[in-house]
Length: 70
Image (cartoon, rainbow, N blue to C red; front, side, top):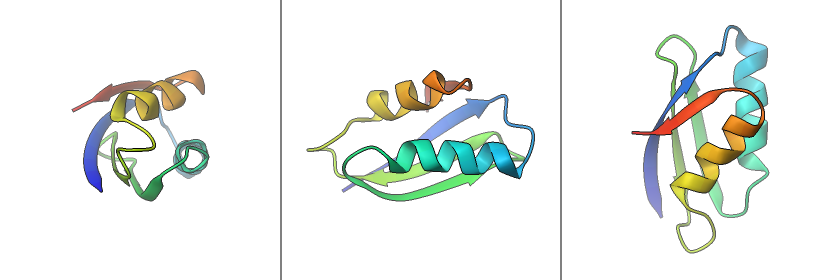
């Protein structure tokens, strides 16, 4: 398992947080997702044999939030 932090810009409410969490949880190998609205960041624990950090960032970017691997 790997734990990775992400910068996620553009979230403005708890609905945004839920949208980001749901999109990440659709990917294979995701173990845990924790999004912090105030800090505009998130931490994801995942199985790196099934998904990588860049794929997670791309998934969040696809739903409209500027995302970078930290």
